[in-house]
Amino acid sequence: MGTITVSSATLWLAFGTFAFSSTAITAGYHRLYSHRSYQAAWILRFYYLIGGAMALQGSALQWAAQHRDHHTFCDGPKDPYNINLGFWHAHLGWVVRQTDPDYGRVKDLSVERMNRWQHDYYGTVAFVTSFIWPAAIASLWGEFWSALLVAGAIRLVIQWHMTFCVNSVAHYWGSQKYSQNHTARGSWWLAFLVWGEMDHNYHHTFPNDFRTGTRWYDFDPGKWFISVAALLGLAKDVKKTDKERIERVTLAQTADD
Ligand SMILES: [Zn+2]
Ligand SMILES: [Zn+2]
Image 1 (cartoon, helix red, strand yellow):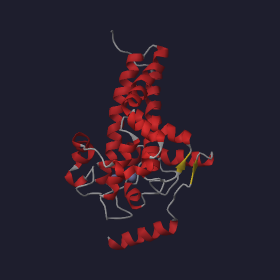
Image 2: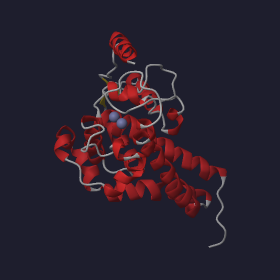
Image 3: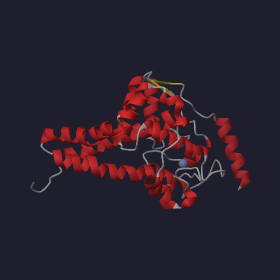
């Protein structure tokens, strides 16, 4: 094997793979499966299962069970990404030390056949979608190995750190406009670092809202994706916190300061 070349087509493929799978994580694994912020047509749910596996972040059942624990037991010993055990534990340490989550927490999801299928065949689905697919596409222009490296391995490492930042950075730096009952924080620059999971303080305060902030133009591909899906009739019962409640909570929080 000679030197490895990476053409712009392969770089675009890597970005496409990244965007496709990251949106499946935020709109699917996070807001649909973990929080049930809306209802989605089967074609969307199928996309989330494929895209989520492509991000190599575990099955939807595993991800949602852990994430529900994170919200219920936030900042305590049963929080899988407990920030009080330090920044690095919340960022990466929990992945290494992780124990099996309590699947009893996702009974509502495991009744669905498609979710059980993804969970049972997760290893194969993840390997095929995250490595073989991009490499097979790039083989059309003769860059199988470059794509395996760039759209597969390198893309995944970047993507993992971006997701981990929600558990570490977003519980460490930033403002607490809505609540101080948990360590979650928000900042505008975080949006770009974490593919739109922007105001984590907002999210922990209103976890069932399909957005992570109130302004439609804030960078949040998951929110935009769900909005377009709703327009197309592929998503319904999209949950949004009402304005008055947000104002009340914000005022109470400012008074506490
Ligand atoms: Zn959090
Ligand atoms: Zn959440």
